[in-house]
Length: 512
Image (cartoon, rainbow, N blue to C red; front, side):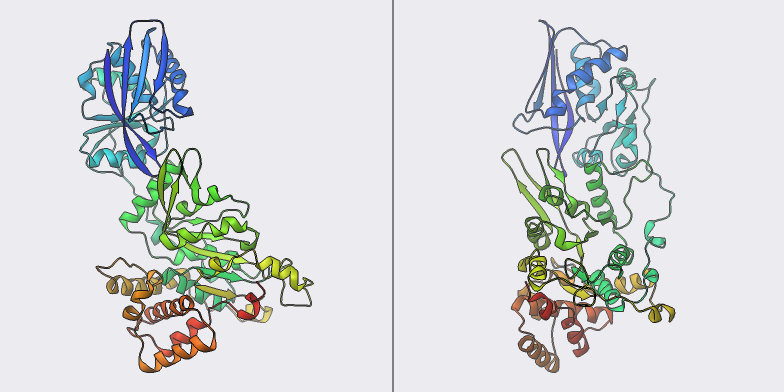
């Protein structure tokens, strides 16, 4: 007997509907799975057969064939265990075919019959809802994320026996059908864990941070150990604007696919902070692998990607960032698949100025010029050219700490950032732009209009600082953000001067 059950597999972050075709026919006992199954799915026959036996359900000693359509698409993961098991029950005559009409299902089976949580349930439920599916059976452990999607009946299963009883008689043995409830206060209304009020001194770096957050400009901090680079980076998510509902679902979908959602926190409500170790590989940073998984740049989507000890990263790994920084996405092409991961992140970097960390203080630094040159050479020119704000930090004096800290709190800084973002939202309405940092060269003159005095100064800076055209456009984009922070419609002379101050120090970087 034959049956067909619809489930779903996730490729990258995109859900792909899968038809699980099961046939049970007379013959020597066998269990084969065809249709490009991955290693986890090939092992499903042992999990499914044992789960049915230990749950007291009939596991037929017949010829069982499972086909996963489309057959040319590789399927990975354990989410097809449940539809395979139900397909066997139907094909062996223990359940009727009609009961699965307009019903999808996904879940992994334990050997005792338990339906265990799986990755990527949120995009699967969203796909089912968009196609007009009435019901979807999901593991009870994935109920929180599943109920984020409206327009579909969510049925939560704890074990294969409860699924069997429900499909045999939905009225007498209903599955739990929860609705999304969240009484917790939005994370965006709470004080951030790391607050700029905790940072003593370093006013230039704080200023650069608020510019970075307001215009989504990438940022590099350079300075000796202990000056507060890492602390400032951790404070930046706290001054970014609250997430929109669309952004919350985007981030939650990524975390669902990556298996990083917790039962207590089904919906991601605040910007994240991704700080990979400098030993990370290109695959770890960008994603991919035999089974395509999101990398650090995708986990930092709509959030902050912090690269600490930048010069300790492999140069090849850093160069791989060039395309995601420009395109806001990662396209991975392999023989067996092509996937696209979102990667719209705010890049924040930190580094020491030399191997020992204390250059140019020659009282502490004993590094030779060739050593410093090799050290800086780990960052290629194209990567450095994609960083908007460069800040050199120095140790804070004890007298400055005793004088007190007059810095705004992160919540106060966030209000200024939101105000600047609102100006950009209004300016770029009905365009592809969202932030000043995204402006293309062809639109610079339109959106970064300069008066006669400002234009003359910009030309002088271009000549005196020996700027490239890309550096010149970067200075104008930063000037536009500075004007927005001052709630000014026009770029002023002071904005141009301040923007120029954040370019890389040529006396230092010329050592590259």
